[in-house]
Image (cartoon, rainbow over all chains, first blue to last red; front, side):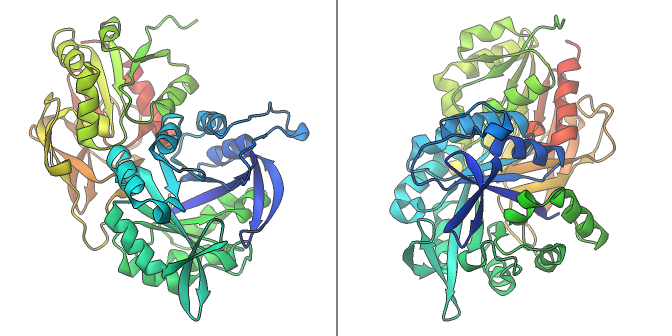
Length: 259
Length: 210
């Protein structure tokens, strides 16, 4: 059973539409959208905070919701309306950051830069929260045919490729990997099939792919990859009305094993 | 007016108690966080949630004295206890995790690592079908073989198969739902399993005291 996972990218408390990790257009209130996705029985919800400055205000005049000024409050409020698995990423620098997110209602935390900054902290988080609660988000760009890993919202190049980093994460005890091709982010060009296929084959960990979904067929194509654990997408689920149930129904009709 | 006695949600510093509380609140089931082991005797029903490693979980239960009060109240006062995920595993005698560690020992059996093989990734993360066996109170009014959300690397093997009410086939069979008199356990997360999961929590809240 493959998971179809909507992703909310939030910046300063608001959902944004993301493109190539750099341009972000505000599209709505995070709590309302989380609630909507819960009503559509989404398999899981991923929320990634990509704020540079840690100022939060999810209060938009047109959404009649009181403003929420800290990421912890946002997690708390979101978890009140989602009765599905909820992963939260962004801003996790130490064990306390990880613990408080879980305590406030996240089921899994998603780490990125930390993998490269402090392997010791990652190991510590895994030890305390367990592998199953720790997801490594890994972003890459294809350079000369090789998936080169980048961090800090795609601005900093790591001297390792995707396969090496995933292997490293496995050793650290991380429970799942979420991979994103930066150049496909917001492109609607379809998923990075070849790379995803190769990674799923090489890694023992559950792999969730993201970036590139533009149409129902994109989901179908990537869902055919044997042993892929989840398919995530951001813009498509947040931009068009009822797109989540539409994608699910389409996949069901096409014989893909979804819930 | 709901005059039912609240369910105690045990907070020993492990796991995601907020999700459980949110689910209970949503269902309008009265509940209260129990942070002090001494207060547990005020409750006739309690939930032991848990995320994390077995050893860390047991150490926390010991440090906070919850292990003693849980053992005492479950056997003497017959308090109804529901362990969720790690909370279920902690009910067993022993786990292989972290080189082996002793559990609460309320349920005879052990917690074993799920073996990684073809089509069996570890941790087991995702929505899986549970095979119903034996009569179940928790699955009361639930369609056959419910699909629930799992996230775990270790799983329970119960000695007395009569108390197992749901199994998961993931490479091999694991006991993922147990109901032994006043002690209940779910390896999956009912608080994260949408409609079916919420129904399971509601069923727990409606179980009559022994």
